[in-house]
Image (cartoon, rainbow, N blue to C red):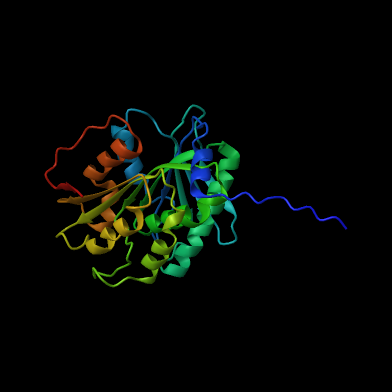
Length: 270
C-alpha cells in the first residue's frame, strides 16, 4: 500500500490578504445587519434617507435566513448597480449570546449563497446594535472559509461590545469571545464605531462604555479604527440609524460618495 503525503498549505493572514487583493469585482455591495428583534425592514428609513442624499441610486435586496439555514430573498439588484444594499436578517432574531453566535453562522450561510449568485469578492458592512456583534463574529470566525472575499469598510452603530455593562473593568462573555478571536479579523479592514449618547453615558439602551470596548478588539488588529461619538437630537438607540449625522457618515465613509457634510458641533472623533 502506497501512502502519498502532500505538504499542507498554511493559510495565514498574509496569504489570505494577498488573495483577497488579487482583482476586485466591480460589484461591492453594502451588507447591512440589524440588531436583535429587528426584521429585514429595520433599515427602510435609513435607506430612504440615503436615497434622498446619495448621488447614485442603490437597489435593495432583503434576505432572511431561517433557523434551518434556508435563505429567502425579496427585492432585485439592478443590472448596473455595483453597490447595492443587501439587508440580512434572521428568523430567530432574539437577543442573547447563544443566539448571536448562531446568527453569525447563519450570516456566513447567507453570504456564501449571495457570492454564488452575484459573484462579488469584496463588500462593505454596516451593523446596528447587536448586528455589529454578528458581523464582527462573522469576520473573526467564518470569513476565512471564503479566502477570496474581502471586507473593505465596516461601520457599527451603537454596538454593545461589552453587552449592557457600564463597567470599564468587568469583561462580559461576549467581549471575551470577540477579544479571543480578534486575530481572525482581516488586517486590511477600515472600521468605524459610532456611539450615540444622550448624556455621554448611554443612548438610553446601550452604555457608552460598552461601545467604547470596540477599541480593545479592533485597534491593534486592523488597518484603521475610528470611534465617533454623536450627541444631540435623535440619539436614542432606536433612532440612531436614521440620525442625520450618521446618515452623512455612512454616505462619506461606507458609500464613499459626495455627501453633504454636517458641520455639527456634537460630533467627536477619538
